[in-house]
Image (cartoon, rainbow, N blue to C red; front, top):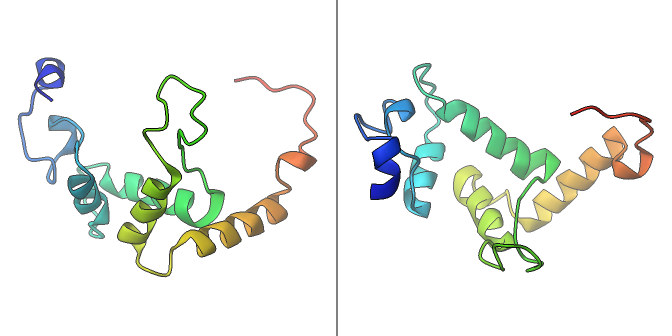
Length: 122
């Protein structure tokens, strides 16, 4: 954290203004930060919470290193994100719910199997 503070010094309270501090570096701090349901237009916390809601409840975009064939090894397991979804949004958001809702979204939007674009520019 001290290394990051050389480039991104902490000049304020993360809960009041996330632009003035480094990103929370503990699971508990992150859950506390994203678990706040009050909207504050001076921070991006609502956007982060909204993104996590989409990841947990619709698109299933939970980035893991479970396969192990990458530069990060197996340090970020899927269970970390499943637990995070449950801790942020309650016990009804669990692995069964996430799987079910992701399958429903894939069916509704067509999924990768039905992707028919010929050219893609990023």
